[in-house]
Length: 338
Image 1 (tube, rainbow, N blue to C red):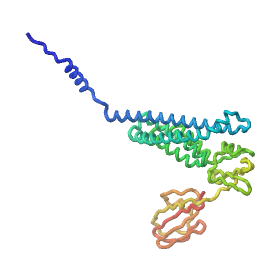
Image 2: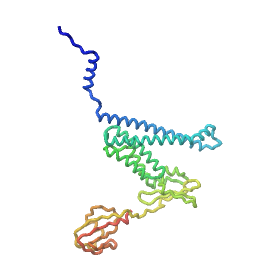
Image 3: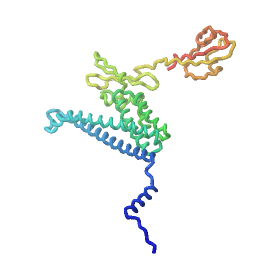
Image 4: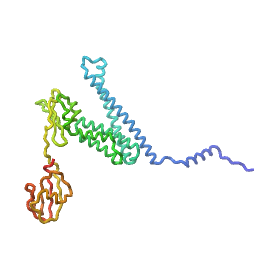
């Protein structure tokens, strides 16, 4: 009679476990990296939420302080007086908390985007991180404009954010595109916005319609008690708005305060060599139409000079003096261009 053979119970469990574990494998390095990447996004979102809350708390305290200060001292309640005494210290503390939260977000965001753009450009989390980065960039751009009227710097900041989308073939972030268009429009004063500025407007009211003047374009005449704000126009020149420093209100304005100037930008040299024997009494227009220029010059070029062998010839008006050589260099002078 054959005897049945049974494995001890514990060994059987181990065998089964071994078979099961042998059939399955642990997560790959790529899966682990992706899991860590997604966890980093979750951390970033938590930090960003904390930053937004810190900003809201600080803004609320500053608004409350401004409201109480606007009330005449004799009309303030005891509660308001107590708040007025406590709020400055609270605002300092909240400002410190806001700054710490901001630094944490920026550090995590930098690490996240470095991994996202290089290792996971097509992962949905990358787009989320880029949008968050762009939201922060827009806030910073607004602060740059508010503090210094530096629209150009603000636009450069936003353009850098926008370039990340393009680098991984993502469509642009529409709020970012809209903000860039808004700042570009406000960068230069228009006649329509200038006409909205009225006498006795406050400085804040003027900023709302005309924009924030560039800080170097604010001039104060202490003797006359006048503060002047210059606003550049896209076509050149500048408009001016004048305030009395006694009440910081508009008393005059001039859209043609600064006439467009002929500014000599960097000299543009268009150089090339030709095998010719004689060019004499040719006009500048003839040269432009008969010589193939490899580097284009803007409209408004007004004079030419020619270097011929060891001699240098010059122009009289816009006509070349007689010259003879096998080769020469034509130089376009941009001194009369805007």
